[in-house]
Length: 140
Image (cartoon, rainbow, N blue to C red; front, side, top):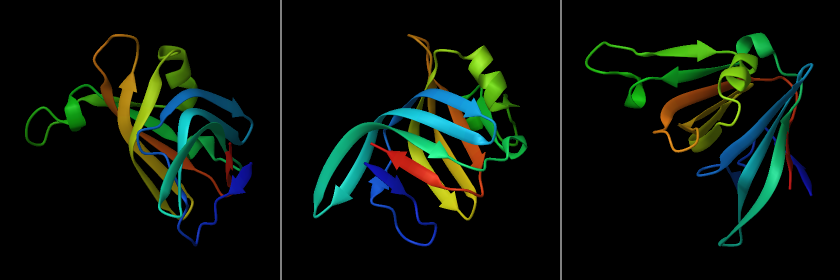
């Protein structure tokens, strides 16, 4: 099944608690392989494995922010972390999974916040920002 997100309506899908298992970048498209995509309809929750594709992505406006301390600060007015392109992230964290805790959609901007897991290591807090003027396509 394929569903294209309408930027003006509520989406029947949720990515809360989903894990991004793999990221593929192809020109101006970004594909995310997820372990679960949740769907809510008729007072029922269903989940599917699937892929989300973002089209017409401006990769220069996309990044992943990694925080060295939970929620990015280790005291008042402190920041500890780094910002990386998707390519840099794939090289430095090749087997990492991004667990989505919150998701936000505003215009052409999509933001996922959550935990970055790599093996048995403690997770890092991260924010993934995606900027695209095309479609967000759910493939389940």
